[in-house]
Length: 223
Image (tube, rainbow, N blue to C red):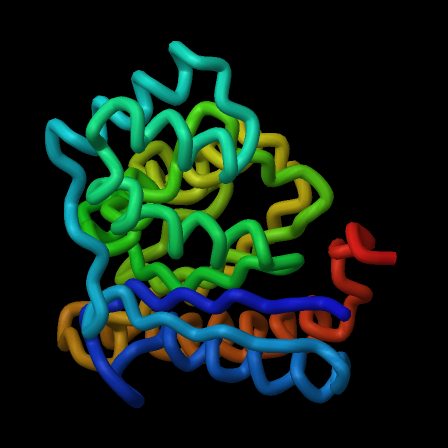
């Protein structure tokens, strides 16, 4: 039975958020296509993950030093190092991630990269031994401008390259990105000439999430 973990990191709420619009569409299509599947949702803005501090950094160091490979071993190492409280704040998030066959992330581009809310989650859950192979990820983004291949702003896209490198480093190579671009065009007068291009991008993104949601989940882990 496949499980979808859906994270939203966009600061804007409701109909104002293009990344959340894509996320709602994907989740609805996925749950229709996989009626036996299960679904977990977390809003990283209204239910934020605490930024890491010195104790969380020590937790990662102890994990590496002792060659931790699973949750049970991490329990023992954290307790022995006096880091049980810090691990208790981290473990549920790691468990939630490891339970997922498909990870769905809604993340607008902020300052050419990812929202702080998403980065806080990444920093909290990531441990040297974290195994993400045999899973898939879908990242749904919204960009105020155009950052696609061949555009003048392509070199400023530190969002997709960062997330792709992050997941690949953890063994998750099945990563799909869907971008809604030129989202500022409907509201910024100086971008009015690009409103049609934005609507085309938005429609293409909604079509893409419908197709991706219908795919068989990567989670053959429980097959």
